[in-house]
Amino acid sequence: MTCPLTTTARLRRADAFCGSPAVGTTHFTPILDGGDPVLLETAARLRAGTGSDLEFLREAHRWIQQRIRPVYSLNETQPASVTLAKGRGSCSQRIALLEALARGAGIATRSEALLIHGSFWHPRFRYLRRAVPQHILIVWPDFRLDSGWLNLSDLFVADAKNPAPAFANQGAETLFDAIATGSAHWVASGCAEGSCMPAELAQIDRSLGRFADRDAVFARYGQNLPGILRVVLEPVFGRWAARG
Image (tube, rainbow, N blue to C red; front, side, top):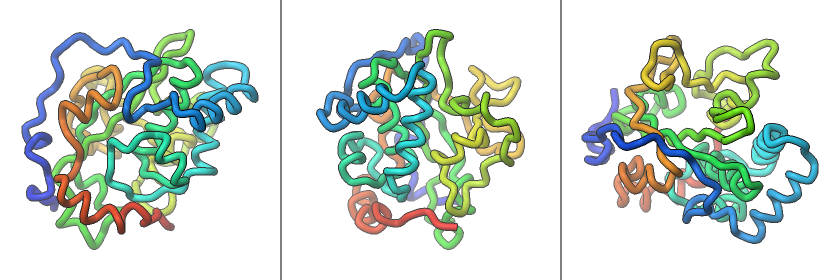
């Protein structure tokens, strides 16, 4: 069971973007503020220890895992530099930080808007199931490498000799962490544009299209909770960490 009252009107009537697929850029945005001096310095430091763009992205992901504590923060449009300064962030905020670091290192990114059934979060919020929105918007990036676009789900797949079980969305492992094990994979055969949950995690409603950046996604569809709820709940959820 999910709650229609916590589902924003914009997400209830969300329609897929019918324009040309986004080409992606390295431009900085209000969310992906990779031009922030501290963020730029971090990107340069990580870049200096890696050879290829793929190695940089993997190292940046590991660095975020180790340095940015996972919490349930609700502000989807928080600048990546703020997440870095706080040292904590939601999966969405940590992904935005990875994108910002990538753009700061000269790697173009683009964003796919995925509409997920709220029940996907039931295992994590067992006692709050009735308050979970009917749909949750996830912004999932691609990174432009020399070989073409690399989906975030595939960042570590080549190294996963023994793939982990499908991500269950519970316990201490977050969606961001599961990327490193190859278990946070949205692709299944026969799905439009290749964006769909595997059968064992069939919680995706549909892809709403690809955009130049996550700013454009939230500008079109809004955030996942009504503004008043975000303001009221952020002091608690913004410090509430995922635990096993």
